[in-house]
Amino acid sequence: MKKDEKNRQEPAVSCPSAVKEQKCSGTADSLDAFLEQQKMDGRMQKIKHKIIVLSGKGGVGKSTVAVNLSISLSLSGKKVGLLDVDIHGPSIPKMLKLEDSRISVIDGVIQPVEKGGMKILSIGFLLHDRDDAVIWRGPMKAGVIKQFLSDVAWGELDYLIIDSPPGTGDEPLSVCQMLKNPDGAVIVTTPQDVAIVDVRKSINFCRQLKIPVIGVIENMSGFVCPKCGEITQIFKTGGGEKMAVEMKVPFLGRIPIDSAIGVACDAGTPFIYHYNKTETGKAFEQIIEPILALTEPEKAVS
Ligand code: ADP
Image 1: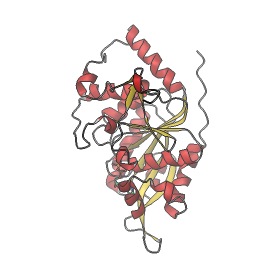
Image 2 (image 1 turned 45 degrees about the horizontal axis):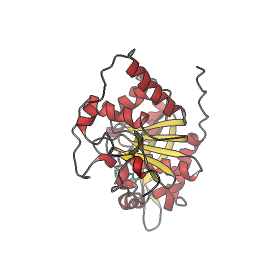
Image 3 (image 1 turned 180 degrees about the vertical axis):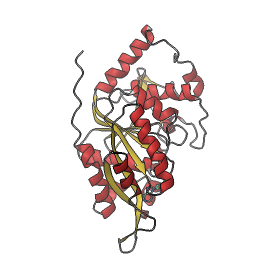
């Protein structure tokens, strides 16, 4: 028996009813709420940088960016955690070939799954069957997200990257409200106008919640020929950059459509790990430079 096995328990967040039992309704000044908040603050204080990856629409490559950004940071020698709060469509387990992984709880603390030196947590690790649909209302989702931030053995991290579902709904709202002083949001879009209309909403969402926008990434911008490597502009490009200028937020860069990304995601072998010497790999690395350059937030004096 392994050292910690005797202390292992089944996760208490494995079904909606478990979440329902949580005290979500305590008043702000109740002792419970105060202690809960203290616990979360204690965990979050050990994480230097918290970054939320947002998108206005689904399918624009938000999870792909979150995974590759995390791995890039990890390859740069940083201690990284990746939290997937896409409760209805968690794709991180698939992208990292962790579909069969399950989390465990030791002494009441959720243990994230570890791979390649990264700590990873996804609602997908709680589903008994990967095809299960999660049908939860807002407070249940907020309860799980809160647990994922406060009851998890994240330990000391340089970066926690949070993959949020598309849009401006319950999950991104909960994360943004619960995280005190996140470094900000990275917003992923595609160059087309239909995606850009929604990304403006994501930027305004960040502004309303006073979350800094680290920058916008224009994904699927041009197409890399799998034979010769030349990039062809099959759709219009530059929409993300133009919008970023108009909205006065930084533009982090473009990532082309590269069949190697799709293949790598499907195979659970992260693109950036195997293809960092390609043009697309270099584009990814350039994009993370401003994120690597983030300075450590000032510690609050208590
Ligand atoms: P989202 O999180 O925005 O819903 P995903 O990251 O799940 O989107 O990406 C959707 C699909 O698009 C995945 O199959 C992924 O492999 C593919 N994909 C994302 N970005 C690219 C790209 N630049 N080139 C090729 N395929 C991509």
